[in-house]
Length: 443
Image (cartoon, rainbow, N blue to C red; front, side):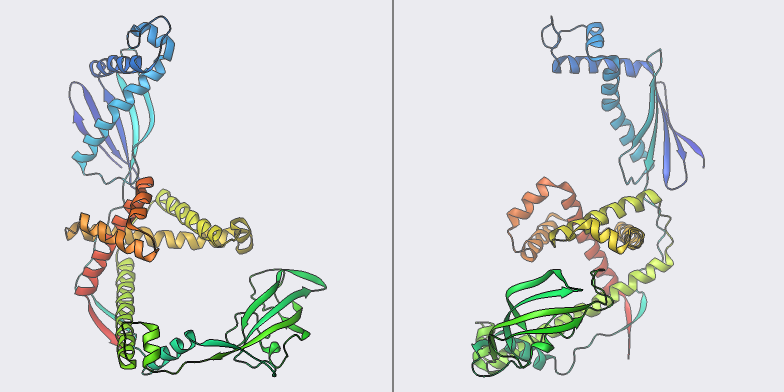
């Protein structure tokens, strides 16, 4: 791709070679006068750290020290002290934007003690921005339904309902029942298909179709059987499309008593709201804010989709693979937190299917990060200490913990601070794009 000598003098030469896939090769040659000086310094440092038999700490001669710790160890000490400065100078002079730390591929100390080093730098892909401000976009506008307040009041009414024991009648669709059940497929008990004292809302059941419906019109203390069929798309491969039989016993029946929608309900929902009208205003305000947030989300999605189409970025495979591994780690953590088995899910869903999904998400994440970073650079958007503090406060509220706990986690994992910084930059850039966009709403 081409070579360029970036630093040449009596003591050191650094030659750049631009490679494919956003990589740069550095050929570094350091004169013996520098390496000999650094070697002597390395000997003194190591002599202070090791105990050589027969000598006081730090007083072992160079030739004895070489035999005791090995010349190779001393040379590695020279590299560790010398290379960071060479890399830093080269990176700054050429405005290289690195993704990963420099990778030393080989090094050689010659007989005259001069040094040759070959290293590779992986650079961020170049981003050539198109017009990103004042973009004309068209989206379908999100609008609240006319009865949004009434529907929310019904939800609140249901939330604050009381449960009364039912005597003298069979179950009806709106009841809450306490049941024991156990299920069988082909005569074998279903793993995880049984429970004792399970509370089931017959009207809002998330059980397989037909289960809750067949419990209607049965009496308390009654034992009976129901027959259902697992859906063809059921998550458990062994149960897909299978006929099943469940033994049911009703322990108790309770009915919901809904409160009246009035001032008293408003006070239960929020003690600061003293009337039904105040509650309605609060619901309406929340609905309007929700609609605004949803439309801004749609605008941002459309803007970034448009930028993805117009901006071609050559993303190297190594960068994509690292992001896939990060996504896999996040996915595994979520599965473990939910009590699932990561390996079983991989086997069931298929390694290739999950990999392809992860790859698509990885490319999208990388493109977003690169475009956001470039726009932030163009617009001189930075992150202040106040921004970080506000974001940490927001995170603490979301996870219902203290700011001190979040700070402690950041101190244990510096990547969290980088993630927070990236979130703030992304939010600022997204706000810039949304505020400048010319939006046309579809009817």
